[in-house]
Image (cartoon, rainbow, N blue to C red; front, top):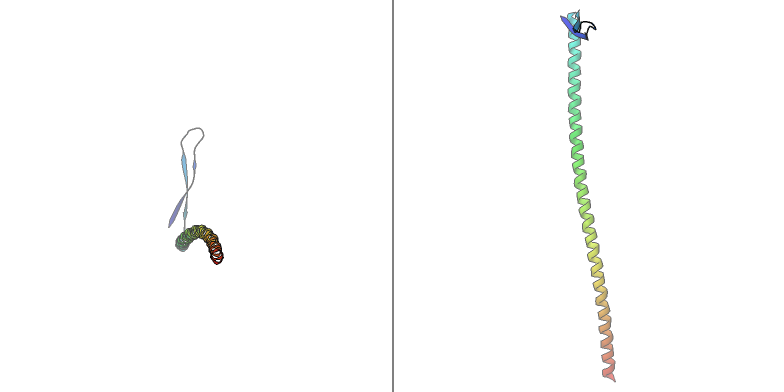
Length: 118
């Protein structure tokens, strides 16, 4: 088995012609098989890491979406709470006004009752 690797491109200074230098090394078959096995293992490890990375990204995306959904619900609940507080304050004011009118009416009724007794 012959393995050739490109070492460098050396442009000669004077001629302007680039020379390509190759190193050729003859590998024993067992060393070649060992390198191929290591390459295959590295590819498998990389594929596994990429798969794990995709799972992590999908989980992060799902968590982000769940967080945004919960935040929207919280914001809507806070808005509803504020609206309910305003409505309660308005109703409390109305009840106060009605109590005043009731007290005035009771005072008038007591006054009329006193006038009718006399």
